[in-house]
Image (cartoon, rainbow, N blue to C red):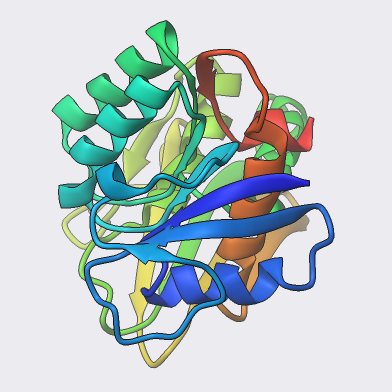
Length: 252
């Protein structure tokens, strides 16, 4: 049984993971960390991770960027693996996470924690290697709720990067064609963003050839998909040697 500390336990994702773990016989949450204490949990909750004296195998982090520095110091000192899911990290924090993973403990960080998205990333590399040399145009369309402030999504960029890496970086990302009055170049990879309603996250990757179109689609109907991925990542990471991991290691 993997024993986990839930960093950010009283946030939306922390509570989602708490609920999912209750039905998973392979992992349990033994402690939580959160400044907000208005929620009753089945495990002890500490306001500061440095005050946590509960033995654990791994930390699942869904807190905030401002809490990550303290988290990384704790994991470095305790040599405790961490699934780092907080977004908006600075370049210095990303470097710090890499440093900790190199010297002290296992760190898993991924652009998207969904198992489906990470399987899709693998599939896209194979698809690009087949369709791009055959002259297919590639376009990515992502859709999210109307409260999302960044565009395109980090996941859309990760999908594009998987394709571009497979094709040795030959594509130019094009985000807006409103000022272009020319035919589409074969080396373009278009990325379009849609914002509206309460869409959790939709991503379509379109390979458009002559007389045929192949579309890879992923739909997230709730944020639970990210929680499930984080749980699988925690079970994978527990007991692993120091190093920097991502979800591709989890799915194999």
